[in-house]
Amino acid sequence: MITISNPTLTLSAEWGPDDPDVESAYLLLKDAASKLLDAKIKDEADFKADRIYEKLNEARNHYKAIRSEDFQSRPTSEQDAAYNSLYSSLWSAYKDRLIKFISTIGYEAGAIVAGDNQYEAQMAAFCRRYPELDWLKQLIDGQKKNWQDVLRDNRNAQEHDGDLRDKKDLPSINTPLAAKKMFAYVCRAVESIGICLISYKLPEYWSVEQINPNATVFDRTPRFVVQIPVKY
Image 1 (cartoon, one colour):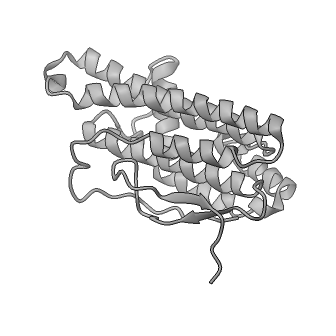
Image 2 (cartoon, helix red, strand yellow):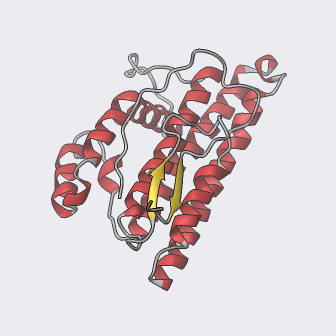
């Protein structure tokens, strides 16, 4: 069983020319799910991991369009549509698909994406129900401050009525740099929360180790590994 920190990601330079390696998070969750003892839960968790991958791969396709050489020359309406599609896919991977994956392994975690008026009460109830996960609130508090609420509010405004007149303080994330950072944040959250919570359900002879804490999906370096601890 492990816990994770919530660092703020910064960019001192471009991420680089490579596309995000969303398979790293996906295969990690698949690998962990394969080690669960209950066959029914194992199969369902494997299925739900596939559904996360669908949305992350969909997001990558939109991200690749944003990175294309002719993107900046396209009409603004087309650019906005690409960003909206990217953020809709990322939000769905996090808010919907991850929560369903977590539910499959025995944690009802909808509190982490609760609205502002319900968040504190729902997270308090979550921590009472699962005291082993009381550390999670601090992580989600940090995510909400760093990126989660910005992504949610932008996505909701664009998805619903498109009315941004009363949201003048809402940061714009329709830039290539913001898209890179948001992609990294969401993938980090999906991977971190998913693997940490499933680690509580694995047999004791399996251990989840964080080997590259600062790695992102743009580094092509695994951040976690599931292994049998070696004793010397």
